[in-house]
Length: 122
Length: 108
Image (tube, each protein chain N blue to C red):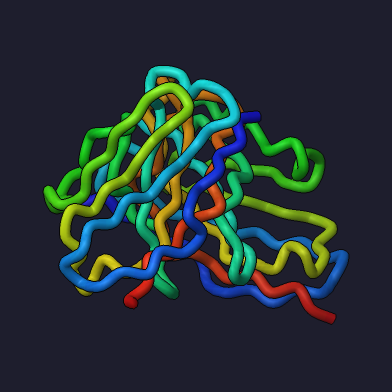
């Protein structure tokens, strides 16, 4: 069975950085893209970025360029999302989600992690 | 980027009724690369429909998707108690992928 298991909740101060992990299991890790999506309290879903798990190449939402970095460790089937220079606007639930097959479309998101709550507060 | 506008914002219906949710795109969505997700409070979204009309694995037949180009619809033929939730549309044909703002289906 396909699972994405995310790291636990984080509380950070403004200006700090946070790194969230997403460990995949139940399928061939380097076969599918992984997306990151966030949801601020009471708001909709916002796409943040994507990683090609085979090559490590990435693409990011323009508004987050320069602040977000997605990496992967294929040896442990884990993807990481780091967000720096945090503000209160970054308070949200952060989700990883499996996308399409690598080399085809980025695709829809068929399996989601349970989410990681990141709270930015002084 | 493709802007998706969902309507209505909130739909108040009773169990057993039919729900019709709309998702309109600011430009044509290539190859009907549109998905629908269901989200319940405190849970991650769950994929319902991809390719505008293909049900995901394990999704009941009462959920159906239709449309092409810029206009898409999610229909729930007869609402069950577990269907009251927020529904999001998403396009994945263009970069970046984008989501609509969501439609809440609530019990009347």
